[in-house]
View 1 (cartoon, rainbow, N blue to C red):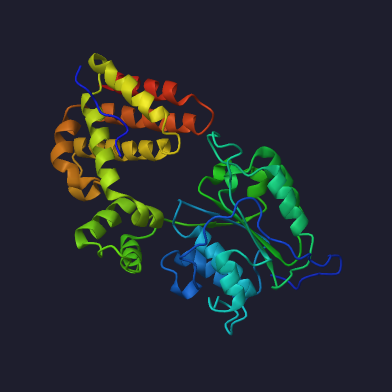
View 2 (view 1 turned 180 degrees about the vertical axis):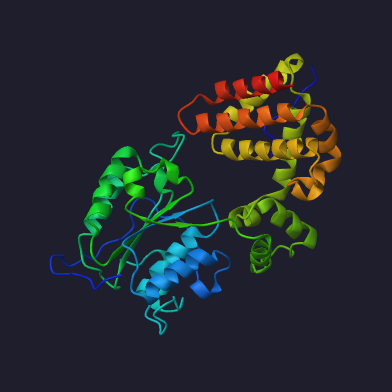
Length: 377
């Protein structure tokens, strides 16, 4: 899809002080789609160290009351959180893993188990720039945690994108971490843990997740069930693996045609933007400012291209290049500017991303970014 075109010019539970759990929905805030990749620890690809930590904790009955799963998006944090919830409540024969077949596992998979709570950020209004988790959702959760487990042995709370709790919600949730309910495991998931309160971080056992290997990404792509469409060609699988950067979501869901169109647009900007072509500056800024949902992904794509151009300019090998299929077009563009100019442009994009993660005016900051591109020429 074209945004625009350029024109010419673990312990035994203490239940003594807890009330019976009322029969009601466990969903807090908005529920997301069930995680179609959740499974047992043994069958999950990659993340060997997080799996080892969790299975050892299960084996030694030393599951922590609170975890922080942190690392890049779409590398298995939610999957392992869901699997841990299953293992803690599984009715199968293996006490150290989820059978993925019993009623409890199936309910947790579908997020309808009364002892499994999943929170994710929601937008307060359709026009809000960023979703958040508000204090009302945390208070509702705290009410639910005051009761005994209704069906399982352990209540499990998963807070996705925990850094998007607003300050009031973080401070309220801190009380839960300071006095954790018995028979409860709390799991915070974050790609940006530096945005969490230090007091929250200090009360969680941190488990770091890393990007998946290319081999694991390839296996995941090839293991997807065949639908009505034709199977992926090997060349497309190679392309998806190369661009995935260890992210399952990116590997599986990227629209290749849209990616190609977007890259073509962005390279045209990088090639032509200058003080003599301010029409490009204003056209891009105006078009991008309207794409609030897609703005950060577009800037990520721009960062990737600038990174590759800088690598070409510094003489790196083709194997280091993410967008190597565009080498014929990219090498002349790379050589048209100094390495410092490309590094300055990279910094300009990163600063714009940081500004736009707050409440900055998108069009103004995009215009400033492109003017910095011109100055870096």
